[in-house]
Image (tube, rainbow, N blue to C red):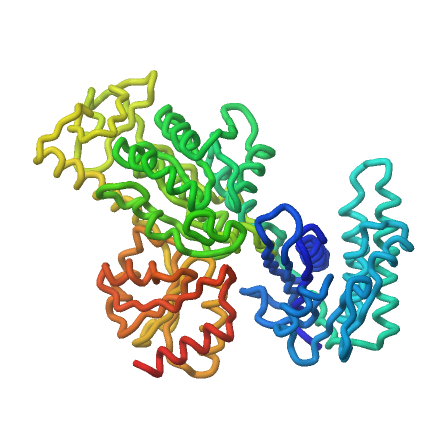
Length: 563
C-alpha cells in the first residue's frame, strides 16, 4: 500500500491539463483524502508548455511532491520534458493520437480523443486519462463518479447527458488500464476526519479572511496572478455598505484606496510586482498621511514583465519599502492557504490598529494552490476598528508619540491627510525638529503590532532553518526528514515578517547560523535578518518553480557540514 499518489498532467495550454489535475484532486478531497495541487503554464491564452500536478495522500502533505508516480502526457514535448521526474516504477499514460513511445516499458497509450467521442462527450478526453490513472492506483471509481455527478449537475437541460458521458469516459479509461496490466501500489484508504475540511485555493482563503475581518471595499486592476482575487470579490463581497470596483490602472486603484481609507472604510486591493511598483507613491502617501489600507501582492517572477505566470519570492524588499524615503510597511506573508485566511484577516486588523498601509505578501504558488484544510471559523476572527476622533483633541490629527484618534470626514476633528512633512495639526512644515518628531512617531506606531506569533522547535540547536512564505512547506518537509535522521537543527517560522516578533528575533540572534530557503536571487529575507543582528544566509532558487524537498534537504546538509 502507498500513502501518496502524485500525478502530473502535461501538455499545452488549453488542453485541460491544469483542470485535469484539479478535477482529480477535487474528487479525492471529496472522498476524504488530503490533497495539494500545483500548476505552471505560459502567459499566452492558448498553447505553450503547461502542466498541472495533484498529490493525493492518506496523511497531511506539505508539498506537491518531488517525483511522479504517473505522468499523463498529451504530446511528445510534454513527455520529453517531464519524464525525467517520473520515479522508478512509475507509469506513463499518453495520448497515442499525438505521438508514440518507442520503448514503451511501463506506459499506456490511449487514443483519448477518439474514446471520448465514443463515450458521447468529445470534451472528456481528460476524463478518459483520469479513469486509467485511478484504476492503476487502486482508487475507487465510485468516489470520482460521485464527484462528476455533483460537479456537472447544475440544473441545466444538458446536465444529465454530460454526467453520463463523463462517467462512461471514466470507465472506458479504467477498462483500458485493467487490460494493460499496469498497476501501482494501491493507495491507502482515505482517513476519517473529526473536523470539517474543505478544499480551497489560497486566493479564496485570503479573500474570505479579509471579509471575516469586516472588509468593506475592494478596488483592483486585473494583473496576473492576482486577478482571481478581484473576480472573487466581485462575486462575493456584497451587502449593505460594501463596494467592489475595477480601476483602469494600478495607480487609480491605490488612489481610490487612499480615498476610501480616508473616508473611514476597511479597504483592500490585489496586485503583482509590476503593480506594486506603480503603487509606490500612493503607498508612501498612505504611510505619511496615516491612512489604513491593505495591498495583497501576489508575487510572480520579475523584473518587468518577467515570468507573469510563475512563482517567486522577490518582492519582499519592495513590499517593506514600496515608496521613496524612510518607511517600513508591515508585511504578513502566509505559507499555505490555511494561513492565507488568517493572514488576510490580520492584515485588515493591523491596518486599522496602526492606521497605515499593510502588505499581504503572497505568491502564485500559494494563491493558485488548491489544498484541503480545516474549515476556518469566521466567528473566531476579531474586527478591529481604528481609534476614531471624538473631537477631544481638537485639530491635532497627528499629535502624540504614536497612535492618535482618526478624524473621519463628517465627524468631529479636523479631517486632514497631508502627504507633505507636517506637524501634529497636519500643517505643512519643513522645520527639522518637527520632521524628526513626525518620522519617529510613524516608526513608533509599528510597536503596537506586537501580537505576531511564531513556530519554534528544537530551539537549543546552534543551526536553524527558517523559511518564509510559500517555501514553508518544502522547508518543513526537509526539516522533518533531517530531524528524523537525528540531525541537530532547529526550526523557526513566522508569517509576520515585518515587524518580526521580538521574542523570535531574540532567539535567532543566539544562533550560530540561520538558513533561509527563499525563491529569489538576492537572498532578501536573510539580508533583512542580518540587518537585525541575525547571522542568516539564504538558500536560493529562482526557476519560477518551488523547491523540491530532496534538493533543499541536500543543500541544508551541505551548508551545515561546511560550517
